[in-house]
Image (tube, rainbow, N blue to C red; front, side):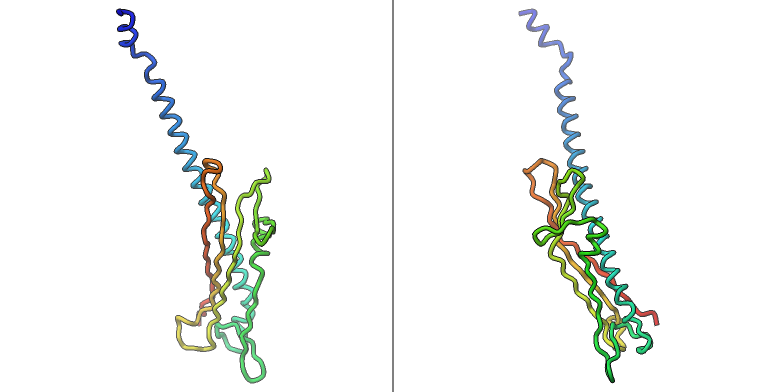
Length: 181
């Protein structure tokens, strides 16, 4: 009985399970934060690439936006006979993004793979809306040539294996011209 009391009274090594539990908890929290930042970086990179592609579409319309015949009106129009007709250049945003991000087209979606052959992310459902400014409307707010685009992005979550669903979000970007004079 005396030996049992001395064994129970001895507290040497009792902090080891607590230390292991705290260490595992901190590793789990760090892994969760790291995965969150990975998802954030991927979404930001895709959004920035789409913004670059949208700016390219706006730049492709530059030749019509400031046509010399109209003396600087901001709408994308071309003179035809005695009137003006809308003249918009629709660039291939998927092609621009595919070139920058090295995307692969599969079953209606564009996918980027890691060096190990796993899916990094996929994008689909691109919607581009070009809002042409009217010819000499006099309304400063409506005198903007604007290109707005949205796209769906899916990034698989690698934290927790197959237990967690993929992150699916809608990304939206916009770019445009505003006349200075």
